[in-house]
Image 1 (cartoon, helix red, strand yellow):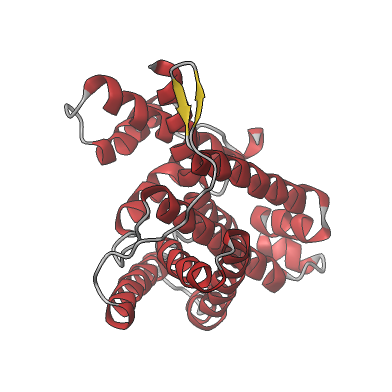
Image 2 (tube, rainbow, N blue to C red):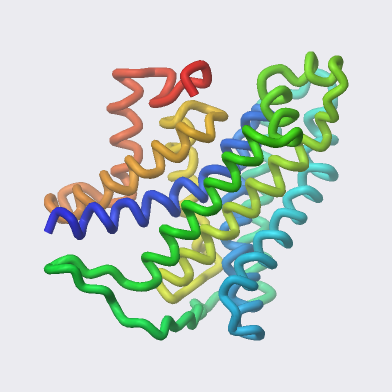
Length: 290
């Protein structure tokens, strides 16, 4: 049923967009592709699982996990990325390689500390599935879509209606001019990591809820799919990232439903990326049109 697949696609696409948003915000400021943002996805899932197992409060698990993961991001930015990118004549690929190393180390640390086995997330909703004709909507789907919409609304408000958001946009446009005009670019960078890693953490929890499982390797596929989304959406463009995430989610769901196993599900993101970039090399939404 087409409507069922559209609902599934929007839900998955929303999670994809949340996962990639952190890398988008960070690229907008630092001009580096932060693969370690996918590590925040796994860290957030495990923190959320642990907090929920103690408190049995899902909203508290989301909030604390996002805050703690965001603070981890700030520490990484201040003590790892900043000393690297502040050095003169640094080759752009060095921060990228650093982020890959951080991502790999994080997965290994999770495996060593918490074990390699898959863990059940264990979220139970009291209400059952909602049926509208042939359309079936599970309560966790509604929770994910609504929470995603709320998070994106908060992000839009911060970036467009606050002084912090103005500072972020000025720094993303030209950090040197922004600094010369009195903008505290360090705060803008910290904001990128708090929001970016926090959003990735929320996406990790959502996937843990959706599939009722988390594992140390759960960030592997999002790490490269995230790159496809931020390139497709126009590098450093938050609006484009949301659009690209939804397109990838819908494309994967519809192709898998109607074409079966002809195309591997996880390859569809890159097929869409190649097709779109052939037609529009700047991405779906360029910065000037955002």
